[in-house]
Length: 365
Image 1 (cartoon, rainbow, N blue to C red):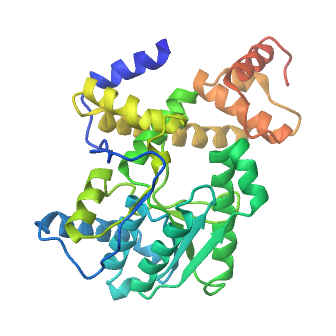
Image 2: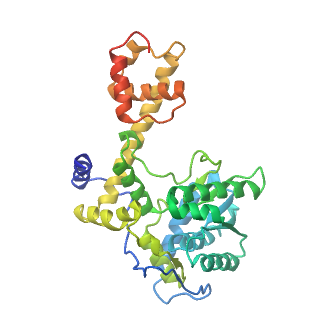
Image 3: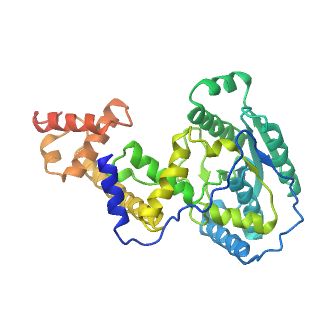
């Protein structure tokens, strides 16, 4: 706790360039009831549309920045019916009007079967997809899985189920020669939460980084994820966009429940930190994340140079290893352990104990 507070204090007193921005207003919810308003796709609100046009342009620019990767691709858009994903779909349909991108969009909805409103939300998303003449896919959790979620491990297990189902479906649609992406509605505020959650759980200085807008590599289920809103929109901007367009959405009361750690961070801790930092906490956390990414790149590049000069044929050569800078020494040792044992992750305290053994050991280890 003390270390975390020191980091927060440091962030709040440093001037950093702009990056992520904190979330805006949080919509109040009525416990136990998901609010599903009637969708009116042809009705636009009478409010000023300049903000709406601006957000469409920003998302369009985000898509254009990934043109070399996504042109002609299949986009499987995950839509829960909530504010974020409904805004994502509308923005994509506006931004993909650019014919040169040749994007093919399909909609995927997950029914976890945990709430009475689940079927109504699925119908809402299906109607939304139909209004754009988009293919709609529904994946429903079976009774055994739902029962397990109700007793333990809901968030992590449900996330893995969604990722697995999306990856499987992605492999079934479109051409086998076509680039394909699972598209999610993560936005700037989600990025801030992700980085802060890493700090709270404990992470190496070189891994204080958030999600990628376009994943460079497939996840463990074989799918690449695309997050076009990650650097282009905040929660408050998405809400204003939908209200300006007269677009309804569904609301899940569990998002306001303090039962889940991430909700506590979003609803209680982040607003407090942002208040302490005079509205600049997200920007400063983003700067820390950027610096962490640069450190990670340097460590990996230098570790590869060391490994090329000193292959792990007969173990770890201690003397050359001792001549490395201390952060690089830890990185090389971590990679050596992963390479020889198959363990991709070693706790920091374990790594330090091994490091002490190597420092006082023989010529190789």
